Length: 216
Ligand SMILES: [Zn+2]
Image (cartoon, rainbow, N blue to C red; front, side):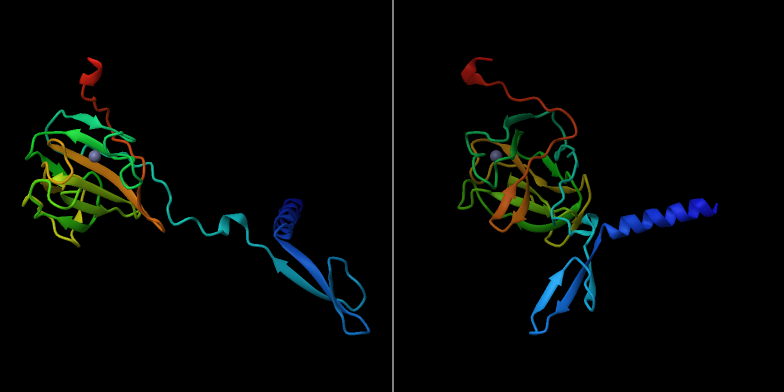
């Protein structure tokens, strides 16, 4: 038992000594100050503690493995433009967005819980904002889910309201920069350079619309 205790102490000593370093300070006859890792007579010892790697601050954004349920009721609907789509998913804010074609008036529901931080509800048709009417929900990890091109007057949530997965948000529409009725759903995070979209996945497979240009 005693041997085991000693071994244990020895291990702790080894572990902690790896995180600390002793430096010796000495002053010569002319008043010059020297620092060394070797002890000399009359030198003053300092122990410098190094922070263990695990204690280092983590980045504020930690990627989550959350998989999003479909943010609508009804369907099945299909993907009409995916991530990196050449039609409009080309800039940092929308690169990883997905467009899902659906009839106007389809119920749009929250795909992830969080707090509503911004909405627009008054835009008619193309209007002046490419997003059209929208709901922006900030998730608890700081990322934001944005539901775009919603039907005018259909947004049923307020800024500051908490929503759960499945909470009704609005009805789908065709407002803003939209070439047909669809939902543009994007997940973003704030960076020093502004909002950027981040990749996400739905929790079930979704079909894609046939590519008529290719005849399939
Ligand atoms: Zn889109």
